Amino acid sequence: MNEFLGLYPAWLEPGIGAGWVIGFIATIHVLFSHASVGAALVFAWLARRAVTANQPQHIDFIRKYGAFLLIFSYVLGSVTGPGIWFAATIASPRGISALIHNFVWLWATEWVFFLIEVAGVYLLVYLAGRVPVKTYLRYCTIFALSSVGTLLIIVGILSFMLWPAQQTWYQTGGVLTAFFGESMFAQLSARFFFMLTITGVVGGFAAAKTADPAEKAYLARTLSGLGAVGAVLGAASLCWFVSTLSADASIVSATRMPESFEPMMWAALAVTLIYFAVTAWRPSVMNFPVTALATLVILVMGLAPGETAREIVRKPWVAGGFVYANQIVGRDVPALGVKSELPVLAEKGFLATHPFVPENLRKPQTKWERLEAGRIVSIAACSSCHSLTSTGVRPIAEYFPGKADAAGIKDWLSAGLYRGHIAYMPPLPVPEQERGVMSEFLAEIIALQKTDPQQAARIAVKGFPKEAVQGEQP
Ligand code: HEC
Image (tube, rainbow, N blue to C red; front, side):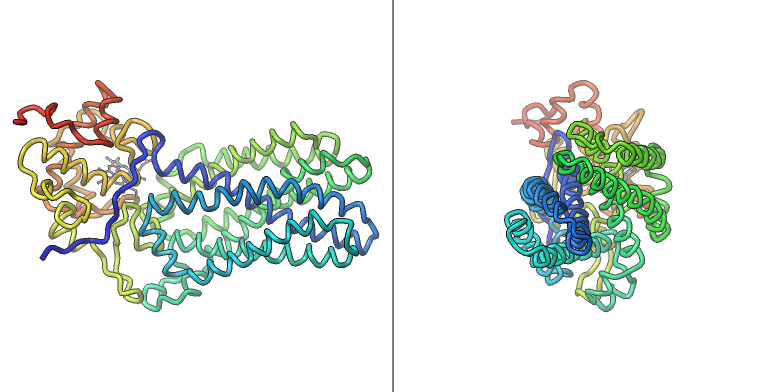
């Protein structure tokens, strides 16, 4: 009887690539969600001051900022949040499955906090000025605590995606062992402080609408001070986070991070501090167009490279240090009864064990069958990280530079990758025949990309037209 691996069909997005679809949604989601959690803390601070220092006009700012957040974070954020789920579930079904099997109750808890937040933001907007200030302060406090709760839970899950917090997790499977570790606290700290920076910037949208000059000056200075402190401590936390990386992840980050990453981060910090210095000095600068521009700068210079870096550092794994980005389970997890699939792949290869390989391609004979089989194996093994077309994430043709003929590619596949000696890529321990069909396909598609990129993209996604393959009898 044939042994099948529990693999799913791959999601091939021929334009920008599945990875970028998730990356794009996730980056703007980070902006929406962090803006809300940071705002919740500012609300609690201002509401407290409204009570203790008798400054009821702060409540008006909370109402305005709350109304803005309703759209910015609670409509756009709630669309992009499930958007990440949909995209990640089809791009990486087993990665998501690994997370759900560990964290289902934590996720349920997070959703409860989130419900409190959603109800809370409505209460803050509609009850501002209609309930006693002290009652309002209680709403703000609950809103702040549940907001920080969502952050705490999500960060634990995100750091598990890098690797389980404690190595004993593979034996015990304990959820807290997966959740709490040094990298989790470092990431929590970085996200917490950068969240204050994002709030300092995005809060400008509501501060811009404040008419009273004295109130506006207070708000601008509070937001700027908060944002600047957040930026400095966030940068320090990022350094702490880097120091917690595992040995493998350190190699990957040292060798594979784009060179622009570090300068970009320092530049982002400098620009942010200058911006806050200016808005603290001249609160009138905190107007709509300047705030919009600053938000865009933070998104492009800070959040996008930051999230990209987290993606790179995670290679070759997608979750928990046991599911590879290409969905293969790469190590035993005794606690979950999960076994490494590398031995099965080494013995039988993808063609025999992948449930979605068409029957007629499991033992390819003709040239067309070999090319199609090679395409399917390449999709299964490589396409999660390398686009097979000329656009998107790490286009495969650019990585085999120069003369990429079938024999050369096969030699390359049979060296480091076959033995699993490359830190940032999953091993490819497949039988010789399978490396053969892969290299025939890769050579063909790389050559075609140089002469006819559009046709190459069509073929990568839809397959080779039978009649166009030379020597094929119809
Ligand atoms: C986990 C993601 C991942 C998978 C899966 C993956 N690669 Fe890579 N590959 C990378 C990364 C990351 C790099 C380094 C890229 C960079 O410098 O930006 C790389 C680099 C390469 C290179 C350049 C040589 C080198 O060692 O840096 C080649 C060739 C390559 N990959 C081929 C493949 C082939 C063929 C497959 C499928 C069998 C594959 N890769 C699967 C992530 C992956």
